[in-house]
Image (cartoon, rainbow, N blue to C red; front, side, top):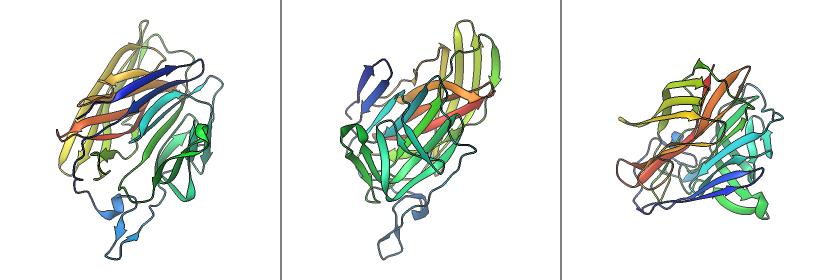
Length: 285
């Protein structure tokens, strides 16, 4: 299995982590029922079923005066960086930084959020790069089952506490995408547990567990970071061939709360050259 090449581009207003992926060309594994896979066929007439939009937000995202951090993850690559560019419609982000979702049947699932974060998964429609004359990056029309673009948008913090411990919830997640190199097959569920966040004069320390379950098989990822600041940090082993990891970020959760959020990848799942990936967010108070 070839590794991934990671590019770090630093600018005054933007930091991107672009990770180009190459996967082993394997046969697609069997998935769950058609109702769990966007663009699946219905019955024997091969009629494509456009998935329904799912999820909701408790409040519209309100950008603060400090700055915003965004994450996007798909089979085409991954981005993380500062951004002030986004469009939100009915709780779903239809545009984030340079990427936009469009189409008469554009669909977002796993919509969640409030005034300080917005999370979701584009599952149907056309994704374009608005910085490159609206170049089409990917069209999700059911031809590749469970194809998706996962996103999360966050408000930055100006400072971190220097002492104390926060209790975290069990997290909010997008439904993970499974990529085996030839198809985005199978349906799985990601859940979280054991999230904790504490502070000292040296910075923040946090840990959490992500569990990805497919059928009767569960793969558990344990992550922890110590003495981190307000910047983007790597969790686990980052991204690469045969490793499990991702990126984490501490953001404003509102009313004195703090979020631990980011993207993750469960590489080389079951040693068959496949991976699960998605976005996560834990609220701590």
